Image 1: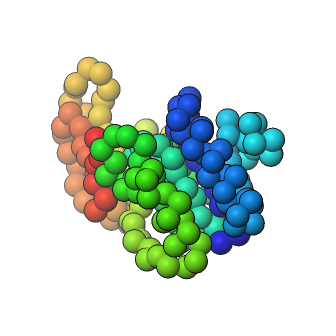
Image 2: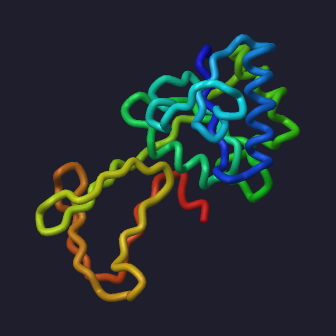
Length: 183
């Protein structure tokens, strides 16, 4: 694992400080290349990358934040899967199970090849309106379809692998992967 992506929770000073420490440790002690967004790249004086570039180029992505931060980067992983190591910076952290106290020990183990991957199912979700696709997303946990703030009955046609499952009248529908909802 030569290229390490680091994603930090936006506008979070603690995540930024830890990102700087981790980046220094990875480059100086482990001779690794760092890929990060502009918020972290600027104080490190290295080039910043988009989330898409990070997910395409990184061999491992370290997320410093919480479940929301991890889910935001997971949406950008298309096609080739990438291992994500979630580091919890304070909340419940269902998906970001590594604590800050464990970070450098766990990173040492991962870089030495001492880890096990836990593959996760991803939903590829397309939203159609009037026969036209208006939105497409990859989701790690769940997708919620609803009318919006005003809970009105909507017609939902559910198709899986080009096979009609059913047509529903409801105020919404939740599809979930085995990872499930973290909220």
